[in-house]
View 1 (cartoon, rainbow, N blue to C red):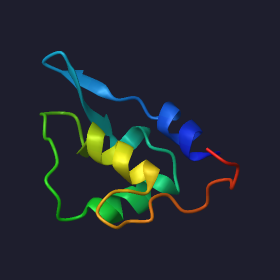
View 2: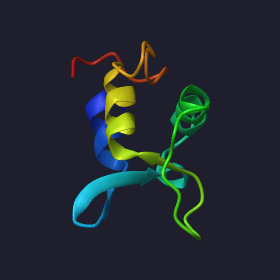
View 3: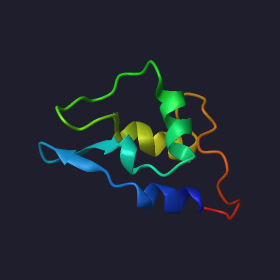
View 4: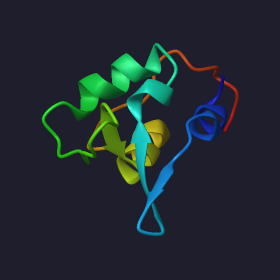
Length: 81
């Protein structure tokens, strides 16, 4: 899987008409654990009954490897994105 494929496989959900959050349960392993570790201590959205969530823009930046100095997902194919 490439970065682009990982970004496409995880749906972003809307809130009030705009792309707002991703459900951690919808992120495939091992990237779910990696992302959850990297966003620990950051603000995250919370909606009753939704479980662990992250802001969609944080997910996008993390997948791209541009989120606050994080290298992003480890273990992806090295195919050019």
